[in-house]
Amino acid sequence: MSIQRGGLKTWSALAGNKKRPSEYEVVTYKLHYRNRNPDVAYEQSPDSMMNLWYQKHVTGSPLKHSDWDVFRDPDQLTYRAYTTMQDGQEEYVDGLIREHARIRHDAGMSPAWIKKLRLYYTPLRYLFTAIQMASAYVVQMAPASTITNCAAFQEADALRWLSRTAYRTRQLSLAWPDQEFATSERTTWEDAPEWQGFRELIEKMLVTYDWAENLFALNVVALYAISEVCIRQFADLARQSGDTLSAMLCEAQMKDFERSRRWTAEWVKIANDTPGNGQVFAGWKNKWDPLADQAIDAYASSLGMPEAASTVKAGRQHFYNVIGIA
Image (cartoon, rainbow, N blue to C red; front, side, top):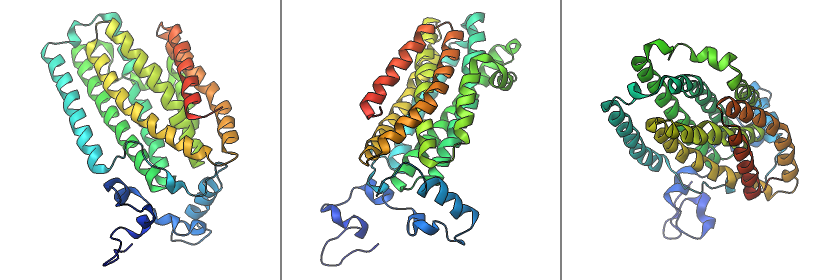
């Protein structure tokens, strides 16, 4: 890129905009070196494993677009903006945890609710690990740096909440040492019927290598189900059970899920501009929705909230209608 002296003063790649580029555009637009030669994405032999992988799972994806670089994050987040925003968010979460520790909140909860936290809340760190891994795959494979940017912040969100859940697990283990916090969650995640729907959904997603189908399965299907039933619905039950800390932590986390939903909707909108992509999305919806339904039903029914499953599914259909998925 270059600056033209005495004429248009802007980055050459953005010169066609006819206006001064924003900070967001300067630091996110067309930054992928692998797009310089789509036939040889990586500076290796054309038949190297990485180049063949990229050809198959990115260039060869059934979801097509002539220029994925037209995508823009609706929130226009840069690294500087993200870290500034989340610094304030983390201060808020720290304050919640400190205040509830001061009043010995965990010790005052009922044994019945403590068991629900051990079964339904602290195993979430395995789910957040999977979300982080899947987001990292999108970071590595997305054909536009503006999409990569969003996925990188989503990966960071998952890591933040993984860390917070692990911290809460340790706090609960100290307050209730006889409840097997921090020692039973892996067995719960792998064997408890409440989690097997989400485990199947997330593990099949992790071995979906087409970049666009992976992003669809993660952001359109899995994150919607996880955020609505494991976070929003669980927050409502926590508040009803007198657990204000879990409720407020879940409500804070929903802000990140809602931001993810905004850029996902924009990605789908951009993709739908290309004829044929609507049919691709419809096929993926038919493939992944039954797995999500199974996960939602198992979790909500076991939690004693079967009506929540219907609420989440109805909300998902509205989300599909809004973003243009048949």
